[in-house]
Structures are given as structure tokens and as C-alpha cells.
Image 1 (cartoon, protein in one colour):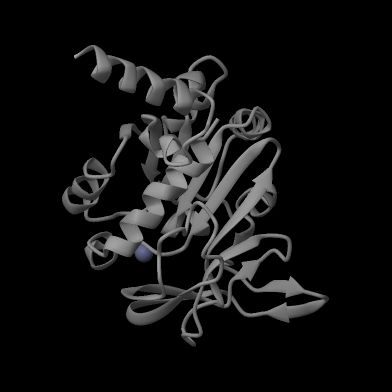
Image 2 (tube, protein in one colour):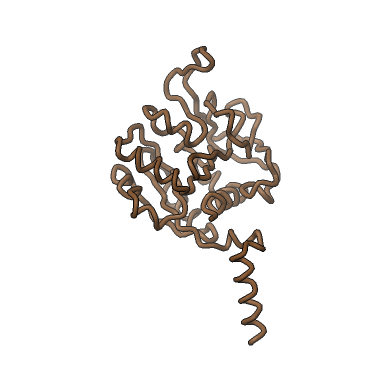
Length: 245
Ligand SMILES: [Zn+2]
């Protein structure tokens, strides 16, 4: 019994010193999930989240979600998971949003959260890209609006097999909604790509904003994706990585 106690003590001390890279995933992540502005199939979505290892979450729904980003209230969370799609954001909420990222709060933008905030250009810099609902300019040339197509079988290529978010994942297939003709900033770090013509070339990347780690995954429309073990593992590793201290 004493030996077991010593073993547990050694493991916990080693985790504290960061000697085991897997320990980070064992840390309980307190996640604030933000929803609203786009419907989704709630029962299987929450069932998928309930099964993510080491994740506990609260749900905040628009229009009241922004009050949870206030300094003091936001401190209890390690990670903000966006699965929302509002078009507008009040000025004071913009300030709280940016300030929590400057203070290092981890952020994961999932699927239709890529399509939020048409009228807030800074959101592009935060999540590293944009789904354009209207024609847009690229290098002085007008581009058509972005597109979406449901139930596309996509071959996904893992572009960085060593990154903590994609570690242990091999190239895989997924049936999901594809976003095409989107804008992705050049300075993002690519994680997941596809050559599916209905989709942009990247479906997953990391970005830095302020002191925050940010992961954007454009996958995740419905349970065809949520039941894909590659998707859930990537989401789980994304939450652990952005929330890592
Ligand atoms: Zn969707």
C-alpha cells in the first residue's frame, strides 16, 4: 500500500513538472460551450461532448452568452468552444472577447463558428480565416461568396502528424459538410487538409491571437462527423492543447 502511495506521489509530481507529455490530457478541462445563431441536432451533439475524456462543460446560449465572457466570470474556464453563428456582436462583448484571448484563454472554433460575425473583421484575425456570406476582395480582385455543401465524403490529410492536436491521427475519411471558397489567413499553421473540390484546402489549423492558442476545425456538421472517432479525438486533443497551461 505504501509503495502504491509512493508511486502515485511520483506520478503526480512528475505531471506537475511536465515530465509526462500525456499528463496534460489528464487535466480536467473546464469548457464554456457557446451556441446560438445556428441549429444543430442537440441530443447526439451533447452525447458526443459528454464522451470527451477529461472535459466538463457549461453551455451559454446567445443572446446572453456574452455576459459569461466578462472578466472574473470567464476565469473559471480553461477553454471556450464556439459552436455558434451570430452575425453581430455588441461593442463591449468585442472588448471582453479580445481581452480574454490577450489573457491567454484557449479557443476552439468548431464548424459553423467559422461563419460568424460578418460585420466584425477582427474575428478573421482571431480564428485565422473567414466564411464570406457576401462577395469579398482578395489581392484587389472580387471573389464570390463562400459555399456550403452537405454530405460530402472527404479524404482528410493530416498535414502535421507531430502536433499535439493531430498526434496519433492518420489520414482518414469523413462524411461532412464542406465549406468552399473561404478565406484562410496565410499565417495559420495547417493541421488538416483535403483536395475535395467542394471544400477549401484546409479544414483544420491553429492560430495565435494575443496570448491564446486557437484551433479552428471546419468539420463537425452532424452526427456523421460526431461519430467519427478521428473527429472526436482531434476535438478532444484541440481542447487539451488550447487549454494547456
Ligand atoms: Zn453545418
